[in-house]
Image (cartoon, rainbow, N blue to C red):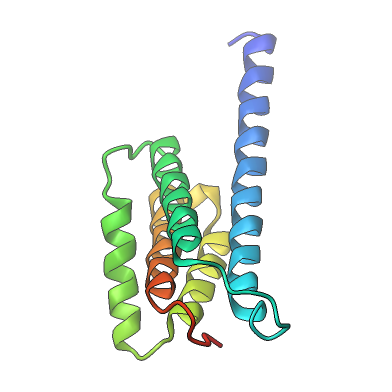
Length: 138
């Protein structure tokens, strides 16, 4: 590989890490908005907006799995299954979403498909929260 090629790979890796970090940060901010908006008197996010966020989180999860070399892995299904299992343990959707985003952040890009599954778990919890529109979630 030439020096120019090595530089390009390094730039792609840095870009991927920055994109991942931004995804984690914006998803965490979304969860905080869900939790704290009603407490401070702001309007809760609408179900349509929550569904749109969930769709974007799922897209990021699929992109992450593909980046890790697992483009055909059903990370959305994995995330939904994970969320259903956690929900059975009587975790509220917001609690489960926080758990999943913390797991994804800790696992990082290096754990590829598993991290993607955790992001998809956040999306499943956000979709559940969209169905609970108007209820206090914290």
